[in-house]
Length: 117
Picture 1 (cartoon, helix red, strand yellow):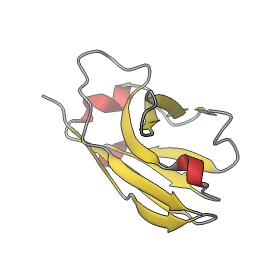
Picture 2: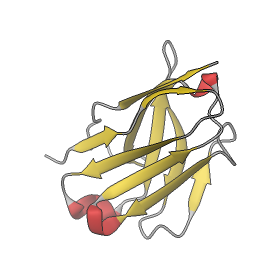
Picture 3: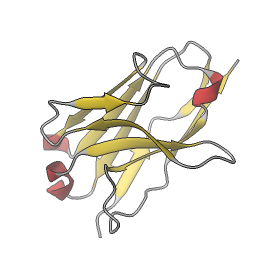
Picture 4: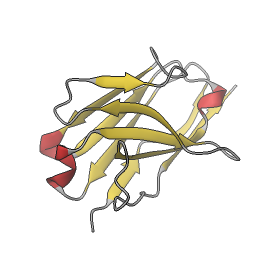
């Protein structure tokens, strides 16, 4: 079963930056568009950024556009999310997965991002 392992979260002050990483256990994920999702306490999980299999096209939710950058390194089975100008409302657990998510692709444990004001 393919596993996704997210890392790079932490506690940061507003205006700061973090870089998240997501490693897939198998290269099969390289054929999928991938996305970063987040879930804040009491809220539904939302998709914030996507990238096509070759990495040539990206899309962002309006709430993060201009502040977050998604990228991927297929040779390393890894997807990244560079987050800048962080705001308290970015506080959430961040996950990566295929986008749109294939039902058989289980969620990883996520990585907690906390932005203090």
